[in-house]
Image (tube, rainbow, N blue to C red; front, side):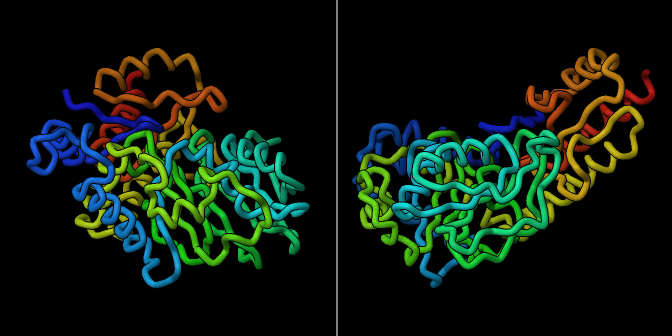
Length: 356
C-alpha cells in the first residue's frame, strides 16, 4: 500500500532523492566508494558542497547581493545561540517575536547574552495566531522572528520593515513560497523539515552585518570563520548535505520556488476547504494565519477519534496525530508531499462524515 507521509519532521522527501541517495551510499559518482566513507576534502564532495551552496542562493534570488550560504551542524537550535553571539553587542539589545515553541526557545537562549525584548506574544492564546501591530525598538541590534510554527500551524504572511538586521527561523517553510528574501539578513533552517534529512542546518547570511558585535566568539560559533572556510571549518555532515543538494536540484527542475508555491497553495486549499466544510472538524489556528505547511485541526466530537484513526490508518496515512500542545491532528504538507496524498486525507474525512 502506498504511504502518505504527513510527518512534521524528519519528513517526506522526493522519491528520486531517496533513490539517488541510496545509490550514492553504495557507490558515489562511480568511484567504487560509498558517500559515507569518502573524504569531505575530496574533489567529488567539495563539488557537492559548492553546488549546494550556490543553488541555495540561486533559488532564493540572492545572487550578487552579498549573501553566503552555509551548511552547518547542531540543528536550528544551535542557531538560537549563534545568532546572538554574532549579532548582539556587549551590553546590547535584541528584539524577538514570540509565536510558538521554537520562538520561545530562541528567546530563552538570547536572554543569556543581553537584554532581550519580546515585542509581542500569542502564548496566552496557545499560539493560535500571529501577533500584529507590534513595535520593534529602534535601538535593538537585530529583530528575530519564526516564519512558520510547526506545532501550532500558524505562518507569518507579512514581515515587518526594520532598521536593523532581520533574522528569521524558516526551518519549516524554507523554499516553500516566494518572498523577497533580500529583506532578511540571516535566514536559518534545519534541513529535516523541507530540504533534507536531519543532520545539517542551512544558514544564509548577508556578510556585511557580521563582525560588529564586539564579542569574542568561539570559533565553532563564529559565522565569519565558517564563511571563510566555505562551510568546511570542520568535517561537515556529508550525507545530509548531499541529500539536500539532490532536493535542491529536484526543486529547480520542478520550476523553482514559484512552481512549488503553486502546488503548496493547491494542497492547503484542498485540505482547509474540507476542514471548514465538514461539520465534524474545525481548524486549530486563526484562519488568517493558517500555515500552508502544517495544518492543525480537531474533531468537534472526540467520540469519533477511534473511528477516524482506524480509517486514516487503513488508507495508508502516516504521521498526522497532533502535537500534545494542540491535540487533534496535524497534516504537514511539505514540498514533496503530492496533491494526491492530500486528496486521500480529504476523502477519509468525507467518508467519516457519512459513517457517523
